[in-house]
Image (cartoon, rainbow, N blue to C red; front, side, top):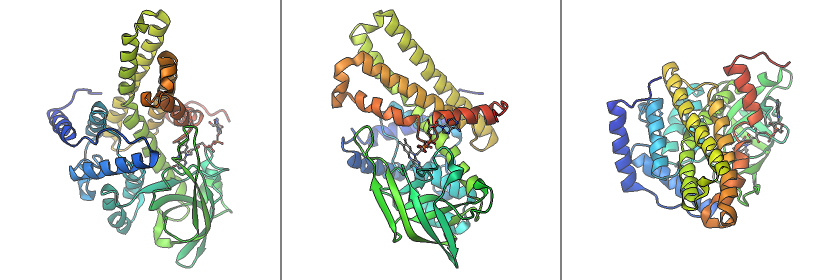
Length: 378
Ligand SMILES: Cc1cc2nc3c(=O)[nH]c(=O)nc-3n(C[C@H](O)[C@H](O)[C@H](O)COP(=O)(O)OP(=O)(O)OC[C@H]3O[C@@H](n4cnc5c(N)ncnc54)[C@H](O)[C@@H]3O)c2cc1C
């Protein structure tokens, strides 16, 4: 693994750093909806600068960047305190999935508008009875001529309140093994028969929703990757999701750690050996995550695709993020309850990080099974 940046990578880093300095979007609005649209505008701005989809091939409007250059991109965003742009379900999940499994017509129709933020995307995988066990999806799509008619319910659908399109996994065949009877669709969210109902989270905000489908009609041309192949297409999306969360958000933990360190130093708290010991533990975990991200990037680059190792990063990120937020709450004390400090929000939000994109238990199973090749318990 080579961790030194090449001359081209260094040149990109300097260019992008200068570009962010000129285009920084400033501080985030406190309202969740305003914050979402502010991050969407940031995606548009990045697109105008040619930075919206570093990792996409240039034929689709990306830069054809290597995984390492993409890491430089995320590192510079974090370093400048600039947000990760909104619509990541489009740019990091839907886009790569359509590139791998979509028809030429689907690629031409859907990819370019994602980067311009003309369309917002959501991910309709989870259901009340199918979260970790995604193969248990019960929402049913029945074929009727050139269309499918969908009935059922999704839950925890992030950003569905803003979405124009949804990556929808449905059952189309109940007579075969569970994971063989699934089909993956692009659903136009303006179709009649869709009800969106926001769900309130621990933070008091509503990032996600319930979705109800009542005889929703989807043209057969909106299937991605063939009828009955939905499981494999969904795995592509999930691998990209976990890699993105681990690498994109993982890199930002360094910022949190720096803020905590300043507080500890300002209040002489590092003189307490127990506090110093816990801080050092977090420093080691953060560094381990940074290096693991670089190792994964290096491996993905050599292989030409992301793999199950993204699960390690997502697991390490959510675990370290949760520990860090808890440590911050304890050491900052009652001031952490002030909205301006942001720590109470981070502490509450960090709980969700161990669930979204696959729970920590499930990711440990994946790492044991597919990365380490350990024998299965049953
Ligand atoms: C902030 C947030 C955003 C989300 N956004 C989306 C979204 O946009 N689209 C979407 O489709 N979903 C989304 N989700 C849903 C998320 O993917 C699911 O919550 C997750 O997969 C877990 O499913 P579940 O909630 O049904 O829990 P369950 O699967 O019922 O799990 C309950 C508990 O049992 C454990 N468990 C289950 N099976 C096993 C096993 N085999 N071995 C060991 N332990 C196990 C789990 O780890 C967990 O602790 C989001 C979730 C959150 C928190």
